[in-house]
Length: 214
Image (cartoon, rainbow, N blue to C red; front, side, top):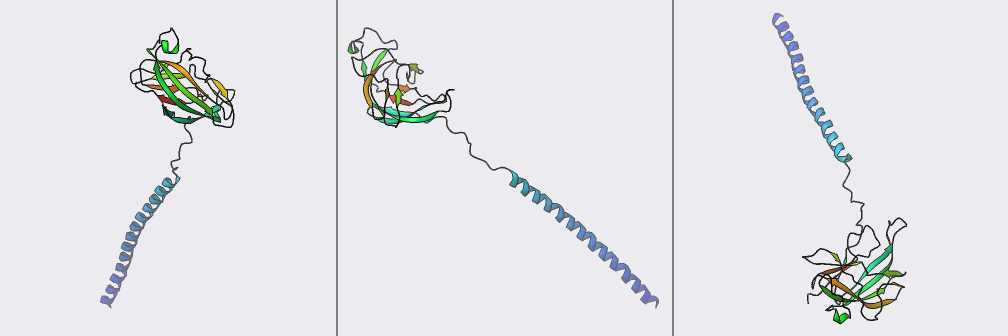
């Protein structure tokens, strides 16, 4: 009896110890699992709440400059702004053809004035309204010249070429004029730019013309 009682006592004492060990192990493992799950979920939630990259709503203020050379034709937009000089909108279109560019002397254009910059050039243009509303073109004070050596300078002059038609005019749809302007440039070659856009935010000329080097 004494031995049985002793064995029963030992058996009862061992069972709780095993259970306690198992419970402690289970609690420890379960705690690690519970701690990891919320952290992972929180990371996913934060990533999901981050806003995706959105394209900029800001549009370019103006179209790139139309690049021309002798014999080339291009079309550009003409427009108007509100009373505050803002909110430019396109109203019509103009077509420009560079019909010729000739370096001339004062005698050849019938003037006694010498070019202040160094060289006169006779630029022959054809302007045509290819839009659906009237459009204006004005060259005086709005044509600049530059090259690799010289920054942009006003190239327009008051010199005229005989009694030819005047390019500065209001063109109704379908109307055109072929006429000349005399420019005063520093040397042969370079780029002539028309900066007559009504868009106050325009960062580029309306069109540019590459002059011949001879």
